[in-house]
Length: 378
Ligand SMILES: *Cc1c(COP(=O)(O)O)cnc(C)c1O
Image (cartoon, rainbow, N blue to C red; front, top):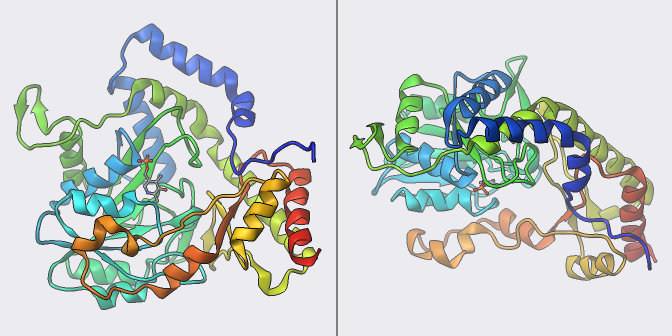
């Protein structure tokens, strides 16, 4: 074909836009020679707390650690049950096993791909101690019905916001950002996330001071004072270098999310013109949601053949996710027999992530959609 490959994601175009600010931040840290926690991380924590409108934010080493720290901070342990979705990245559920508790999977809402809140209520038992709601692909889970019911029963609500930095949802007439609804919010700054650093990084937001304190303690080996350990915690800190990179990037995230939404809008227009009927379904933005399109995931017929066809034409695609978590071998021993999540399983067969990043051009998108049209309509 000779045409340039369109990747599902790429970072170099973004780096070109902010190179100067990034270099200044890195230099500031190098000049200070202070690399672990300290002012740079504190400043970033304060900036994120203010952006998300949450009282407390605690930097840590990754999104996976953020989830584990959250569960440890909430006192989740052996004998407890934690409910989550089977259609998500592995870390949303592995943290449950790592905390000693048992994961309980409830099926998804096929419209939004997010956990179905009504099924959460049906799955509650006296052992349920927490629910992890994942705001998948950039869109918030609809939690307003269940949040008060969980609170009433003293069940913690954890938001996995790894894919939804900056997303919001209108609740009681006002916009509320992901991470500000539950007891804790967990964020990842993995390079490809909406707000990414240049390595691993993560953050926990907390609604109460008590919980924030506990999590701060747990990220430094449970030591309130150096070498005096109140708890057995983790070593899970955010680097000052990553914090500096994130501080350079944070002021732009709003604009980049708007650009992602523009990309999604263009896909919608192009797919409407392509008239693919039942062959392809675009993702839905639920009413009241401000979707930030971490991924643009469509449902398609004949996925394997389509993916191969697109690859030959230089269009990159990915499958998020090919296997539902309730079907993963590593969770077998923790699950009750006969757990079924048919909507999640069906989506695993049909989902396909198309190129999505703020700098994706209209021409590239046209090539993506034209290629898909060619596949279905010749
Ligand atoms: C990326 C991701 C995580 C884990 O974040 P890491 O920083 O890679 O550890 C957790 N949950 C979801 C939904 C994710 O997409």
